[in-house]
Length: 346
Image 1 (cartoon, rainbow, N blue to C red):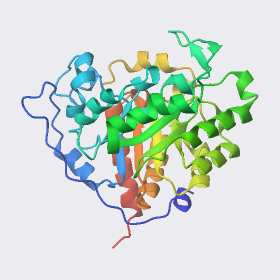
Image 2 (image 1 turned 60 degrees about the vertical axis):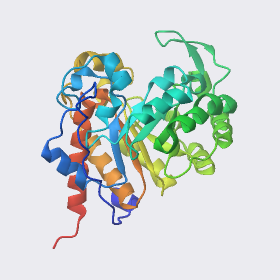
Image 3 (image 1 turned 180 degrees about the vertical axis):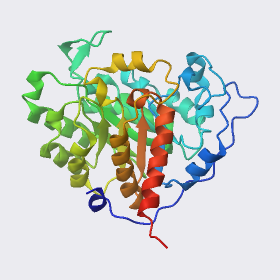
């Protein structure tokens, strides 16, 4: 089924692995094993894998040489992170909680090489229909929800100014809607269409994308507005949404298009299981709950998209399987297995 959706075409391979951090750097990268370097060199050039964030001391031995403080990793860790041969992308999640200035994005961009890409979440200021307290409980309606001027001023423009051509995807992840708003789904989609229509088209392979948390919004009207505005559907692998195979119809309707995917939360935890995942996975040191069906199907989607010469921007959370770098490694191996299986036999 995926082969019919994603036609085959020759694809380039990734560049050679990058050296570890310089000895004078405060955060030292964990040197990559030869097997990881070889794996990275065989992946499609169009594929950029990464994690949803990076400030995790528990990644010592995978990404860092030792367990540095989270505060130091947050400020200075991207340079070491980007030395890992498989980590050619990363998510910026903090922008969801508070809009960032162009200078803040610029500091992130300065830490990584030219071929590195960022997936950035839009601030909740414009993506949440409710004003929430510190515990995430919704209260009053948010008058700035899907406001075109604020989306441009507080997100798109500073991200473009600060990250430039290192943007992989700017993602508007709409928070779950109230039953009252879901009953007026058409009005919400009209507002979304108006906001997206007012935003500039990004240059090159970078994408503006929409990610949802309500299955009710996965409909033909959504597809129509995405097609009309040239905006991508962000494949959201989260227990609040249908499983991956039940979202593929949207990719088929929008084909051909770059792939933007955020693998967020293992389905075993249910739609409200984020805190349970944090408790179970601890310091995120190792893969604990391999999600083999999702991994295998996602690898097929990546293969088909990359084979058509289209960019693939995939970021993975620790809560997906227990350790995001380990998930990236496992997915990379699966992608290579799929590519090898599809290659003509001599």
